[in-house]
Structures are given as structure tokens and as C-alpha cells.
Image 1: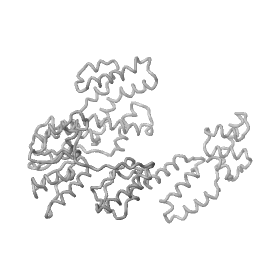
Image 2 (image 1 turned 60 degrees about the horizontal axis):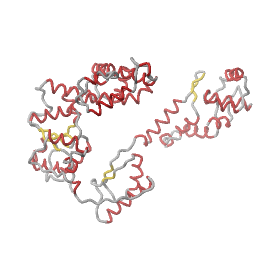
Image 3 (image 1 turned 90 degrees about the vertical axis):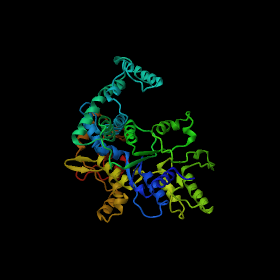
Image 4 (image 1 turned 180 degrees about the vertical axis):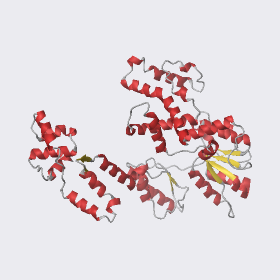
Length: 480
């Protein structure tokens, strides 16, 4: 059974022959491009230039004249605008600011009126306007949501805080776009919206590429309003062909939600009638085997058994053999389980950054800096953080001898704590009129830094030397 990409490559090569090099293929991702090139290479009989590949984002950038910016930069610029209205630290804002940026992106891609969306419809009057795009159930849910707030006086502190932010989002949205435009920056949705508005306002806007060049749109599913406007222009120009990846099993039955978007796409942007691509794979005979496994580790080990059984039957695993992981943390165990005889395999999961050695190095470095203390012009680091960084593989494998000496010194317990805070701690104990005993320190240790707690403990034990500082390893162990 041939896959969809292979069938598209075969159909285009039969249709255009060596002139396939003149086409511009639009795929939803780069992975599809790689599989198309591999399928095409198996069909041709002599060398030829591959078709030009262009992403939907690149088409939008060329039409709009804007270029997308780095996401971290965009969140930083969004915070600058947001902080003019709300007092919030960047650390607190960053994670939900990423969500806000995603919301702005969706607003623009679907050409939504931001002022209407972010209006306070608590009085429900806004719902009396034109909301034909909403179903009765959606309107009912929106009414129920805003009615839960009640009057302003009956709102909780959290609800009032939410309303304060909600009522400012439209202003933040417009200011953010203005700020980005002034700097020549844009997020993806902003690029899409600019391209869509240009296509609507100027019918003479030329599509990127040669006037006679043809576009082939392959494998899209749910289309945004901006993408539909672009595809309408491509269809109207007569320079585009559309190919949809679906199965008749769920497209021909209107009760199946899996085909909801594809049914509209097939109707609005039909494929060439002379092209025949199979869409009945769901009905083809299949072999399904369910293997119970009580743990993730055993699932990974079974990968070896499964692949070895294929090899024993004379079926060589290749790029058409897919291993679908539901948890990215299983990638490395699965790779170790692959038999040595397997040269090619398709594992549908990327390698998570969180599991890389570089991530752990940066994480330890941030922890070291986050818990440092500065006293009398000297900078002190918590010994566990320093030891963790020095024992990291990046440091251990380096020829840095001083690092090994520091590790030995830290492991020997020769740790010093600065005594400059002794008088303040004595006064604090006297003010509370309590004895410096272990129960007091343990009860209130969250009020002290690591170094202050060590000073208190050593003062209790009588091991404090005002000239040399604390050298008692027991204090260090208690702090841990």
C-alpha cells in the first residue's frame, strides 16, 4: 500500500514529466518535503532539478513585506507594552505572556476583530450584535461565563483581577502591533493578516514567483481565514492544484468530525479531475496486534522484539516502518532497543531539549547564580550548587585542574561561612528572648539564608570562630 506523498509524487511526475522541476510545492511542514523528494527519486530515470519548495509562511512573508521575529524577542516586546498597564515582574509574565502571544497570533490568522473579542460582554449587550459565526450553544456558554461574574461589587479578588486584565487586552493588542511595526518586526499571525488584507484590498497584487509558475498545495487540513484567502487567490489565478490527504471512511460520512474541515476543502479547492489518488486505506485489510506491557521500560524492550520479528520474516525495516511514541522521554530507551541490523527507521518524536546535557548545565548554572549571596563586597555560593556545577560532564571532561581541586576541597568539608552577620543574629535572638537551640532554628529557618542558619547553629554549638569563620562540617550537613 503506497502512502499519500508517494501517490502525489507519482501523479505529478506522470502529469509533468521532467517539467516537474518548474513547480512550486507548498507543504505544511519540512518532513513532508523530505518524503516527497525520496518518493520522487524512486520514480525518475535520469537526474533532474527538484521542484521548488515553499512554506505557507514564506508565501505570506513575500506578500506582506514583513518578516517574522524570534519568539523570545516578541515576548520581551509584549512585556514592555503590558508593563505600562499592569505591574508584574517579567518572570511572572513570561509563561502566560507566551499564551497571550499565541492568542494574538490566532486572532490575526482568523481575521478576528480584537476590539469585539476583548470587549466586556458582562452586560450581554454585545451578544445582541452580529455573532452569526457562533452557534446557539456557544452563545449560551458565553452568557453563562459572564453571568458568573455578577455585579462588580460581588466579584472576588481573582475575578476583579481577571476583568482588569481582560479590559486592557484590546489596548495591549493594538499597542503591541504598533510597537512591532515601528521596529520592523512581526509575529506570524501579524504577517498572515497583513498578507490577507493586501490580497483583499489590491486585486493586482502579484503572487510570488514567475507569472507562469504553478503552485501545488499538498496535505493541508484545517485552514485559517488568512490561508483560505490566499488559496482563493491561487485558485482564481488558475495557477494552483490542490491535493488533500484523507480517507473516504470519515470524509463521506458527515457524522464523523475527523472529516469536517476536509469536506469543506475538497468542495472549495478540488483536485484535478484526471488525477486518481486512493482514499480508501481504512477499508484495506490490516493486521493489528495488541501487546500488554506493565511499564514503559518493557514497551521499549518490545520494540527490539518487534523489529527482530520483521527481520526474521525477511521484511527489512526502513523509513516506512514507523514507531509512534506518546512520551518523548522514551526516545533514548527506544533508540538503544533498536537492533543493530536496522539501518533506517521512522520514529515520530523529536529529542526533548530538557533531556540534553546542555540543558542540565544551564540549569545548574542558573541555580548557582540564583542562590548566591553578596556580603561585604564578596560573593558567596552555596556549596551544593558549586559542587553540582563542577561535577557536570562538561566540566569534568575538560582539562581544568582547578575544578578538580575545588571538588576535593568541597568534598572534604572545608567550607567557610562569612561571620559578618553575627552581631545582627545575636540581637535578633535577644529581641525574641529565646535560647539559641536547635528547635528554634528549625522552626524559623525559613526566615534565614543558608549562611545565617549555619551561623546560628554553630553559635549554639560553640564552634564559632570570629576570626576564621565557621569551619564545622556539621553545620553544612544540617543546612542540607
